[in-house]
Length: 393
Image (cartoon, rainbow, N blue to C red; front, side, top):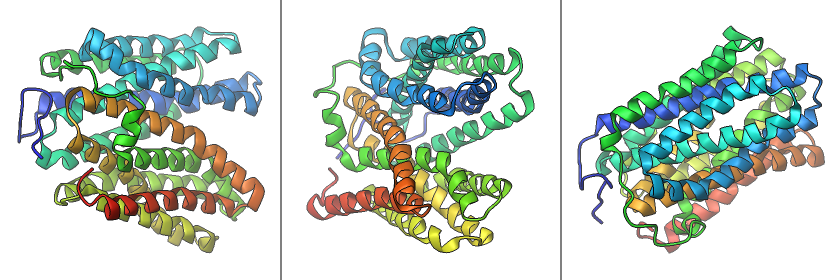
């Protein structure tokens, strides 16, 4: 099937201005979120807010993302892709600074909704722009670059937090400036942005089921990433590791995330059907999660497993996004990208709940069993699609 990139027809070379603009936007968002999440939690704890209420406030991120996903393409159709992104940049930056001036806890709920709703819009339109600008034969490479830079952004956020601390206006201002900086490359490349002419052919929710191999992949990724990152320190310390050792294991997993995305993207470009690679990644994720209970107290072995496991988990996002871009173009691709992020948001809400409940019900090893369950779900789905839908559907 021939593909067009949604810009000016078929292009076989990477269009770097578009790629740079979209990746700059998403990297800035990654830095701001990576800085903001620990910053906000620490400040609320200093104010004496209970962990339950902090968790409830943090959950607004997933709710905002689910609400923003179906609205984003409508706004982009009405205003244009670049104007919508620039408004999202402004709203993100203003709400980021707003947390510093919001003295009452209840004010943080609408601020969370605005901040994460706006950043979700940037995620959706950046990914649409990248997918539209990527040549079909190099789509995996482009998505790998994108995922790597996003991971770097998320890693830089906590690093900035460790330097800036949580006192005063400075950390909030730095986060806002990082977001505002993204407006520069977006504006410079405004004439290269994809144009949304016709409206999507189907209702937003139908795109979830149009390419289920991609949308379920990002749901599993969201569930495992959010649930794993939030509950792994608890799991690791209960198995006998110190807090420092647990933190280092998370760092190793993050390194795997950054290192493996471009190689996986290149590999996906060489495969006739990316669904096979997605099935393999899920199978590796399933095997890795099942080995965790047997690695208690063996830090080096667990680090090796988590290095590859982290890369495979994130590969579901990278390759799933590439698969989505290979199937759709134009307004349909924009709507499908929104559905993709919606499924990711649902996963980030469902994952911590399911994994936490599994630990409470079955003990500490429930952490591994619950994650294995998510991967098993995807292995069954992806293999079923390969068997019963042999063509790229």
